[in-house]
Length: 395
Image (cartoon, rainbow, N blue to C red; front, side, top):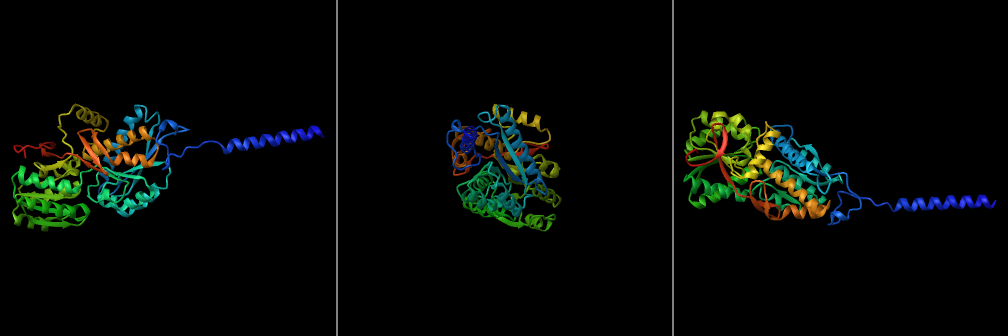
């Protein structure tokens, strides 16, 4: 009897010890907002650090999503091949929003439920980024768009970052470039009817006319417009010194084609999102001489930048580097630096992404102030079917 009692007591004690050990096992939650600021103090090494991307992989803006994907893949592969972040590889989940703001919000609500996601890159368009901002602000996860240029995007909360120069700064640069550098006193505008297009008309008109120029025609067109001839006839009648269309590269290429068919021969200028091979492929001879103001000049004579250009083209020979590529390259590296310094702490990652002084970008050093990068803009022109540095002689 005593032996039986002894065996029972031993078994009971063993079960109690086993349960106590199990309840004391440490765990690591990658997506926690309360993570430590010292990555070396993490009790467990995570399998990976994960980000998400929301952008268009189908629809009329899918080329932007494809460009963004290659930029992210290239940068993550570069980091992972160098050993990851403190030995931990980076990983990305992709989501297709079809460049539809309602779909963007649906996907945003899905992304923020994933506890492993530490940051989300995208969306492409400012309208979509503005729509998704409240979802990410509530979840306290950084929404880091490479291309949202509306000046109000980074003001939607404390978790918004963009890689694009804000419209307030862009349009001021456009106004000074056209009026002072090019010496042209009258401009016609034709802009996509969205948040950025309407802002383009308002800010450019104010800044350009304040300098002494005159906007002789301005109009908005609806998404999906195919026939621009009625509006272009009015552009021609207004007889501007320069024509400034804004929209996707497909929109602006079609506008250029139809403008030349109507014998509108004045110079044309637009923003950096059109610095894409697809723009030249669609526009053909009609975009020869077309000027873009952008954070990227493919001929910029910097050794580090040109080495990147060469390697990216070797990796993706069918995809040209554009300003979005550079923005994402910098943003993904910035995220990796934040991870290296702070580990998987969403709040500290966000602080790092939103404010930088003289960040060592791939093409230039720049500051980031409350999520808004203060990048320099450059002028390029389509010459002999390729983008090259603009000069008054080749413009």
